[in-house]
Image (tube, rainbow, N blue to C red; front, top):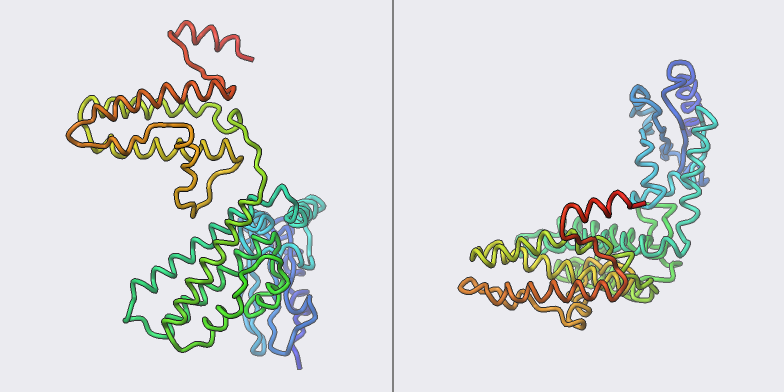
Length: 372
């Protein structure tokens, strides 16, 4: 005979209404009981959103007749992350049934989160979710590095653990890339992924190898290939986006802020301080290359961009500061920095970016007091 889980819920909700009426905003449940898949061993997936710190006191883990219950708190901040897919338990907010609501204001706040989820497929969210998909894949490289660091000392059980980590992150990344979320977890990803339009062609082959192979080398290879194929999909999706070219949006205020680093670099060259020159020169050059790319493409380069973003830096003829890094003679670097400053100022003015440069405090004051 199955435990009457909703009788348990009634006890908890009654307790909240009696002792914590102002401390708990929302109580809800999700998962197998809501979806009609519950078995005699199924637990009830339920949660609450505390309204005050005192509300956290209703959290409780317990077992009744062998069935586990975990009445756990989700703060409004985490619920917000779920609604924006920063936390990939989006289904908890999107598909739960509410059992208790403290007030109309709490209900409106909760429904606002659902509105956010319902809009995740809109074009305005595409780039954000592509970027998040790439961030998730980045975590796969930590697991891949563990494969390499362990080498022959890795046993099959740990190999499978790493493969599971990678597979879970790939599933999450694919959901973000397709601007959707999963309704079921734990062993039910593949049946949902097969309906996604964007996924690696060899996904099933890689996953079968990762789950069933007894060869550590085969598992490692499948993990690497799946990760790289997913990265290719992300790159392909990003490259199809049409960004708005705009120097005024991306580079307003950039030069005024960066001038401090350029001055630091000039001083390092004049004083023969190579270490400062090394870090500042490479940082300035790379930062300028990235923002030029953003101004031209309407988006930042991806995390795994292998230097392609430097195309506009070279196309516009900016000096390669790194080529002049010579600990014995920093004068050529100093001259290159001056050339870069002149070129950058002219470039920005040509693109209609106004530069806030003044020859005196009085000139600045006249500008500032008349600024609207």
